[in-house]
Length: 391
Image (cartoon, rainbow, N blue to C red; front, side, top):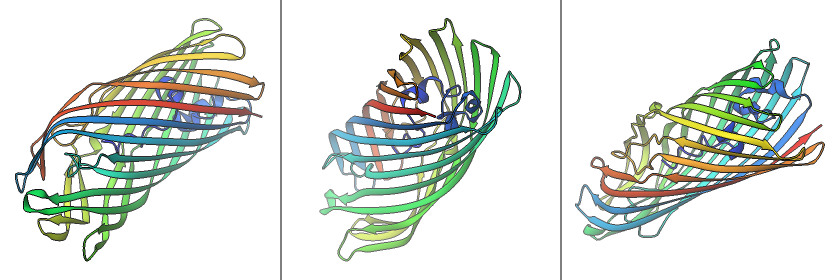
């Protein structure tokens, strides 16, 4: 499940949890291109987010082939770094064009001699998206926008295999692959009154055809040049409402539907692994069977002075995971706040912090090469810094 999170965690708390379809700056290029029409001048935004995720499993893992059982605790840590860049420029009084460059870098490390070392792996993932978009103001009330998402992804997975009960020591594979994908999105913005904004955005799924190399560190080293599989990012639909109560105070509500059921089985081909005392190149099916989820957010923003603005929001985030097939997390409540300061007329700085309160998840995997039963506890913290330049 750790592979799935960064491919949708695209930006800071400000955009990703609050006004996802009604953002009023250049980040609309990604979140809802129709909202680009709200910009009156060219704008550049640099945004970086850092996320720390940790999980702690307590239970037991049994190798199906040998019956070897390990009990105890296992910890996993994942660090995410998400730098991004946005440019928006009004072309006419009714058309605004935008460009976003969005990247996700993360690495996961499992503790040495983890009881889950045969079921999880250390990994490194890089994902870079180039998103050109356009927003068109049809009239005073309705606006339309569309964008294309050109995406590149690179995966490095380092699983461990071993059979302690057969006196076969652990060996580590290095599986590298990369590939590209294309997706798109459309958005609408409705401005029925001066104090009300309603935004809708639909982002399509992106399919990656990943190909690379699988290497088993053995003597002699075993190499497969035909390693690969298909991977996806899920489609999602987002609707947001921004209601101004006074000139200084407003509230935002967002509902998102994420179509995780695109994940059924991942069919991996050409992977090198250890089977008993023998190294083999084989194909494998990894079941996910995820379910679609809802993400619900309520938030508020208040302008303290012409230079200072504060925001706060809470989000309920359903977990798409299936604890009968993967070591997943439970549902979560994300609470966070941000503050923005206008340094001068043309430069604004925003900082945000968010913490996820994640429900414990009971794991009961009875199929595949490892049978795992126990309780998984998880925690997540995120910080972001955003700098906006107006021209």
